[in-house]
Image 1 (cartoon, rainbow, N blue to C red):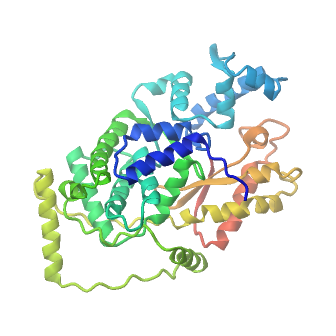
Image 2 (cartoon, rainbow, N blue to C red; image 1 turned 180 degrees about the vertical axis):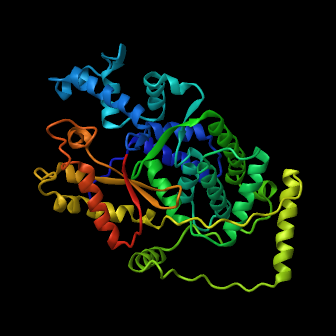
Image 3 (cartoon, one colour; image 1 turned 135 degrees about the vertical axis):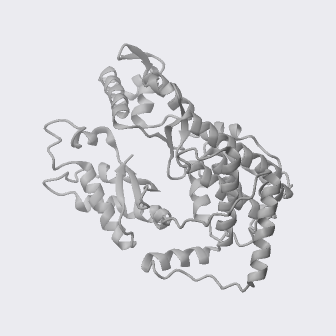
Length: 431
């Protein structure tokens, strides 16, 4: 068997995760540094079209400056400068922007230099996965299924997911903590299986699949979410050190026994096959019998504990809103397996034609997120150099002629595959 070479950053990250499994808490900034150092981790900056054009112009300036240079020449000139819009940029930076290989710190520095107006009132934030959430996912992946801390970590993972999804500030921190606790209580009662989510996040953090998406976020919102994450992070650190009582001390006596985060391989395969073949055939959960009296007693007890801990006036528990499930999340790998061959099959005149196979092989689904109306939005990428020249509105004549747009054949191919996996209405977007 061939030897697998792992990057030092990923090996070091694995050691840090093992330290936490062994009971030693680690600050998030150390995890962030190791993720940043891993060249396999994809970190993509999401920008409005006007700002994205600035990055495209920077790449154009780099291409002109690097014209005629070999890879060896570029490597030797990595720290030398080229000019763009009256400013100096390193060749290394231009190459990283073109190939989308910058890490969080590099993206933040360049963003401040290239779009200085976003420095005022905005911070660079994680759109879909925070470092705390990714760290919890890594620990869940590493620790034993019988670890006594596991249920509490699964519960905290759900809370951080909710924090990461916040797109506005509604109420004070204290009110939001109450909302988060009530959300967890309602969600945990349903006994969801969150293994698909944390496995996906763990793979992203190690650079095995997917990408970390970054965006300019309103500073007040970014720091508000940061303070809520610090609250959860403090509880997390205590649990890692073995103090599981810290969970009930901070979040109250929430029943988390029904949370599932480690299905057996057989259960996992069975669940995926059932949902792919017939989404309506969900495995039913066993019914639990309980008296109205016991239910009311338990609910009242939980509410009293939460009010006591947070020192808040009596608050009515809100019913959990049913949100559309992003069932295709676990299908990313399955679709990506078939996507290149499907794209090649669909590359016919008058659109792009398959010649070398490089374009088709570069097409990849990166993520599936939820739109405001609850529909899946499938993000994909492809080798934009040189194929973006065919894009309508962003390419150049005579290549961009309204029929060769790469996005058309990719969208058609994704929709063709989506039918096989019973995905309903959805959107596609190039990232």
